Image (cartoon, rainbow, N blue to C red; front, side, top):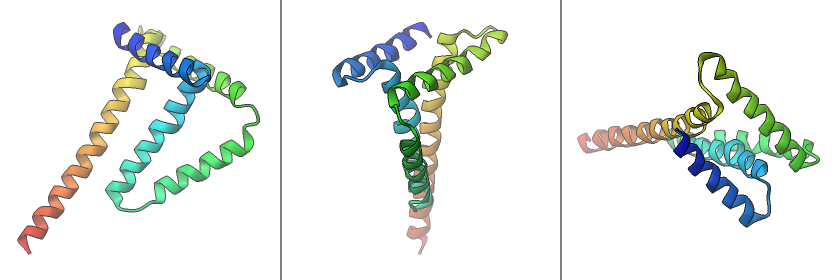
Length: 132
């Protein structure tokens, strides 16, 4: 778990250094904007509409309107995220392990589930088309 955590953290630090943003800002952009956006894209592909993306962008615009200092907001939200991940210490899961579980394994699992659902639906539609 520690190796995975270190790889992800190093990638985020590298992105931060190359963009001029802070580690916390990159973390928030990736985990609260980019990853959820890609989930909405996959959901919309599955349902063949754009509703989820539109709702996501509407919420993002509202957030951008109300967030006056993205750096301070990122620091606050990162702190809240760390506190959430530390909650699991009562069952013996430390911050590093909970980070990997929620921020890597769960994310990968959601991607696999969404992509598998899309592929299954497309194959089902393809089979129905072949029957006609």
